[in-house]
Image (tube, rainbow, N blue to C red; front, side, top):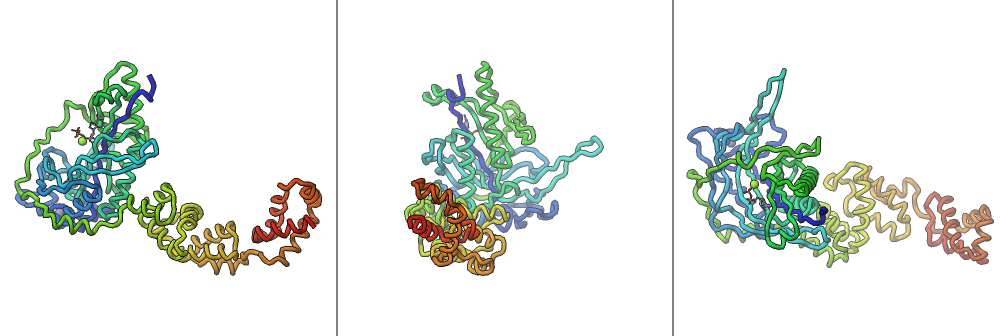
Length: 487
Ligand code: ADP
Ligand code: MG
Ligand code: ZN
């Protein structure tokens, strides 16, 4: 058997920290990144006896907004539950989460599937919970010990769970990318994985197509603590290969929880099924059930911006872009906004603006290590550059060089063209002299052209461009050469 005789089955669980001013159940500042250890803590998030949690309204609202953006049903009643387990980074001995009655039920997210077609990934649920503290494992003189930082304890966390609808590492990667884009569009989460604001777990199994036809599933493993999209891709690919090889050898897959060793590119067993936790969930007695009024849902729906799919579809119809061009622009809301502002300044012609943004501008930004937020070239600066090209003041090649300088210095195109004397030579008299020189310097090529080898015209145009350091207006140069050689 071969790889193609198996279907890969993946379900993703994503934890996203919500962007709120304060923590989930206390007034501590939730913006903890880079803060000194244990500087954002209070008796509530340290789990002191006798304290009571208070629900963060903004976190509830951000969860509902996320649910709406993901086409989920918003529960009329949601209930917080205690998830009990013992770990040093969980000072209460339980995490407040949602279990039987989460805030968001169902939902969908559309990705581009492996076949290039839109593919709807069904969501199972999205629920609100609190983050745990952080254990930092150390070792000195052969003695192992752990440090605890409770800044993260109680930060609002949204867990989003898919159905097992993803069928390759690439689809899992696309799902995560799209989910992060949506979270960022609506301002629910920064989605910054390197800051721990978004974390992933992948559930992976494989099955034969025959099993698939009968609705049977293979045994799954769960890979935890995947801290980058790259890690997700690597870990899923590794597990798929291991599952198929094991099955081919006649072995069986054990249902286990795995970790991912990025440096060694392999998974390792964290715990077996037998040692799986029994969390003894029960409703949180210190918090009332959340009753969500439909009026609140509608008020929050009105706060949602145009979402990536809608924006992409609009870009296709409004600007005549193809789907992949539009997808590139909408992947980052700031880029999409930049594009629309530049297209407006350029008189609405989006196609040309899109080409310049996704080609020369992106590569100049990459080389200058700038992102769109810090870009010194304003949308109207870009439109002014394109206008110079349209008016024939500079040609496209010069335009690309000018854009690089614009990105580096922030100076407008006209000033750069003026200062460096880059304006295109369109003047027929000036170019005629150069054309005569080029013909005189290349008599063999000129004669061959006249004898019928028309390809040599491009060579001669190239010589004119060289003589003018790229500034000749190519169309004028071509015309003058043709005239001179046919005389
Ligand atoms: P658990 O009880 O182990 O947490 P769940 O049934 O709650 O498992 O599902 C957790 C995640 O695993 C969901 O995203 C779900 O879609 C996914 N999942 C369930 N069964 C499979 C399977 N056979 N292969 C891959 N993913 C699966
Ligand atoms: Mg799980
Ligand atoms: Zn606190």
